[in-house]
Amino acid sequence: VNDSYGYNVTQEWNITTTFINPLISFVSPTENSGTNFSRNYIIANISFTEINFQNITFELFNNTALVNRTSYTSQTTLINWSSLPNTNYKYNVTMTDKVNNKNTTETRQITLDTTAPSLTILSPEESQSFSTNTSLNLNYSVSDALLLVKSCWFNLDNGANTTISNCGNTTFNTTEGSHVLYLFANDSVNNVQTKNVSFVVSLTKVSVLGAY
Image (cartoon, rainbow, N blue to C red; front, top):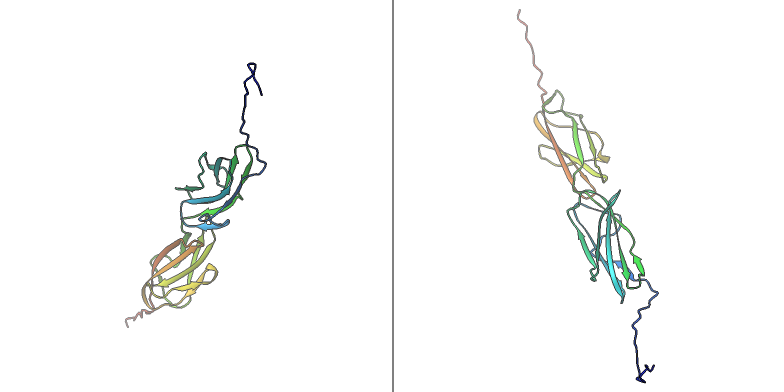
């Protein structure tokens, strides 16, 4: 192109055009969806393919609301959400390129639970006395706010453990004398709760002799 003075003028424009969404996916150490952990943090890490990177956004939700949204204009691929309370979480990552093409990872779910199950011994009662040493009732209640109760077991006087089928009430035998029963329950991430109760078994019958 010539200008009004006859000089040759050249102009150049740099135009970025792309119709392909960024390629983005989770990679290790991101946990699989639907997993449970006894800890207070979540790590999300991604890999991507995009030559015209603009920004990346990490989003974390609990059951009811957005917990955190963090965006970077640098090519940051990992985030560690820490100091999180116990609950169920969902998270995903979105990448945008310079012409506003976007792509979002799958949404993954994870449960954080650092609290042991709730456990209460109903029978024997503290300092209760029994006149028999067989088929004594072990009754208790157990529950967990977030996860399933996995297993229950007990022992007498720190002896051998006995597994309780289906975490239900059971019975046990023992010997005469003072005893301590220790009851345990854990959840699916092995948070363990322990309770104990002391009781006495007295098999001796007192004879009362009358005076004649």
